[in-house]
Image (cartoon, one colour):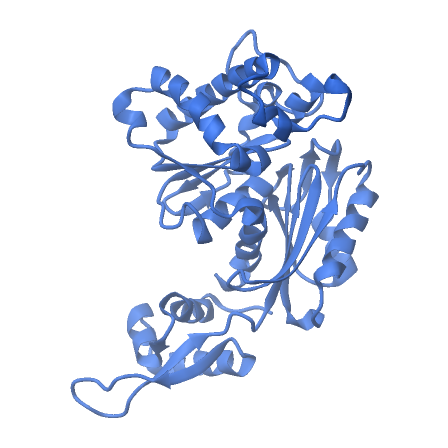
Length: 375
């Protein structure tokens, strides 16, 4: 389904204002009333708009205008968040209301075909409506993605390179597919419906299996020239003594990430590593406290550089570790930031815990999936 930019502008005028008349749309976007009426009729026929009720007459009197409303369930999005340890698949309407949701483990993925099969299974698990009602399939991945050709260059968690996931899923389902970095989508979700709603300049820090970031500049997610902005896991925070990664994870991730913590304590305590237990007891566990404190210092150096370079109004912290251990991390990060960033700069930055939690990437995918078509 393709729409012209003029048609999308009309549709978005209704989405933005909730209830609006044809005449008001015409005034707001500078189109003639006949053109607006023709476009509105098309969207009413498609089921995207509905004539809701009568408004108030103008001061000059006359007929009461018919007010239009957007129909968020005229189409749906299948959204997936592929993480280093689990995948969330969801079916939502165009306002992010979740109708179906399933979880899958991603541990053990060793090749592209296993990834393709799991994604196909996830999509089928939530696809409870006819395919013609689906606007797009939108997928977040924990890796570097080219925004132009949708190729996933590298997924460190699975050690996969040059993954043509969008092309493969389009073949299997015959639907438009969009792919983006999961942290970029998380930023979109928090900007759309979460902690950064209304923010102008925001940095989102995601701390989970890996460490990543995303920038919002002037209310828009900034992906860079090749879709790879925000890959702070590769930042150097202690040259020339920084740790050099040989496993696909970056230097900063070798100091702070779920992957590095699990590696550091693998096999200790005689059982599988449970990071939540380590965090719960971090004040009494000297070994973990030392590693965590050191990791947070490096994280703070990276954030200090971002603050002085980018000057955000808010930094949102999310991810499996970031969301669940927010208070512990802030307590350890802020002292270093205050030491390295001038007070008049850092005092203007607000730190926030993400509001959307594990659904941040999914809801960002919902927004991203309709972006080229309806937004």
